[in-house]
Length: 97
Image 1 (cartoon, rainbow, N blue to C red):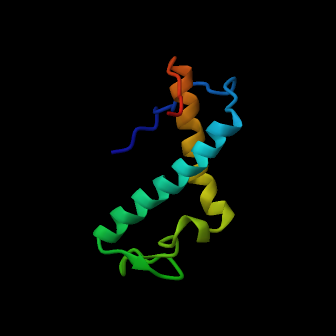
Image 2: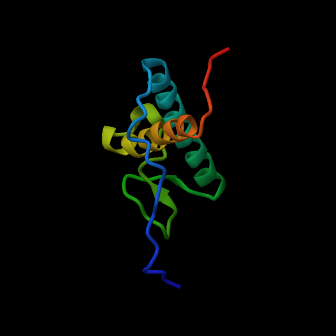
């Protein structure tokens, strides 16, 4: 079922600037997001392969985050940054213990 009228309306986070500490947190979150994704794939029976192959359940990104090409890190990093900005937009404060 396709819904061609769906128009995503994410919260506008463009006015939120993250501190250097929160940018460091975003990078840690990005690595964790990748690890959660990879763990899920592995549980589903996926293994590393130099090219993605859905039939054989092979994926080139089933490597540690540090070994991903920069362009692959961007997705997880942007998700983490936007999540932190969203939290701040909603009035929450992020503090380190």
